[in-house]
Amino acid sequence: MHSFKTPDKIKNSYSSRICQIADERKKGKKVVGTFCLFVPDEIIFAAGADRVILCGGKNETIPIAEQYLPRNICPLVKSSFGSLVNDGSSDVKSCSHFSMVDMVIAENTCDSKKKMYELLGNYIPTYVIDLPQRPDSPEALKYFLSELEKFKSAMEELTGNRVTKDRLREEIKSSNETRKLLHSLYDMRKKDPAPINGTEILKLLQRQYFLSPGEFKEHIRNLIKEVEESEPEENHRPRILISGCPMSGGNSKVPEIIEDRGGMIVAEESCTGTRSFWDPVDEDKEPMLALAERYIKIPCSCMSPNDRRVDNNLELAEEFDVDGVVYYTLQFCHGYNIEKHKVQQALKKAGIPMLFIETDYSGSDVEQIKLRVDAFMEML
Ligand code: BJ8
Image (cartoon, rainbow, N blue to C red):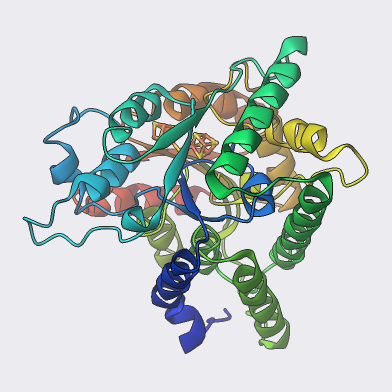
């Protein structure tokens, strides 16, 4: 299998990006922090602002968050909040991004996030985009569009720049280019054996949320080139689709176990996977409407009904010729946990085996997950 040797420039991209943002802020540029794919980057960039994603993927800040939040909510929410309220009195390093953002752009998705945002507002200016929960209803698109218009005005107010249709079109085009590049990379994973493992792809996609669009594109191009020039692996390994909760930076436990135990992740039905780039924005339509149409279709389990996600799992399983699906959820993420049943039924009907893993950010269940993954691989 191709082993991607991360160039220094990419390895150091986290720290160089922080310096870049600090410089931009000195020059007056506004920086916003987001937590979710429902917030269109195109509007942020068209307003002349920059953005970083603040979702936490590390275990260390969870005990800090648990001084404020209940223990029985999802680790992603606790990890993110713990980073923000970390006052440095423990040995835990904080997420430096929080101190760099002028405003958080939040969204009404799951209950844990919604309630966390209410607290977040005590620490940092927080703007919330409301989302319709029934995306297929006739009123939903109209409502979402009006919410995006309000968000656009908030960005104009924050930056002092007008978001023109031309600027939006430019940003839509640029984001579509990134989406196209990612499609090219994913096309390579359709080969058997896939030329690059899924853990490497996950780490690349995690970078997408803090790098600038230009740097991220450069990373994808470099990776595509390296994969093209690499020697193909000869042995078939069970081809796995991962489906479920996002895996924020710092969280790669389950993919690593799957690939260490002989599997090959060939696609991800997740927000750190295909959900982030699969659908382009229509460049021929009025830009705000095109954005609303594209973003409202994100098949997040916070939406109801969310049958599009079930269909996507089936389509990806076929397109990437998978041997099995690992359904991954974070503890206390009720949406993805409950939605498991629908996905499992549909996969069963299609004759595709599925393994369900519910986990957190700790290492306490690693041995148990290994045993379950081993048993699953034997079945495939
Ligand atoms: S579009 S998946 S990024 S909301 S894992 S915090 S859902 S309890 S992250 Fe998400 Fe946007 Fe949806 Fe994607 Fe809640 Fe679940 Fe935690 Fe989650």
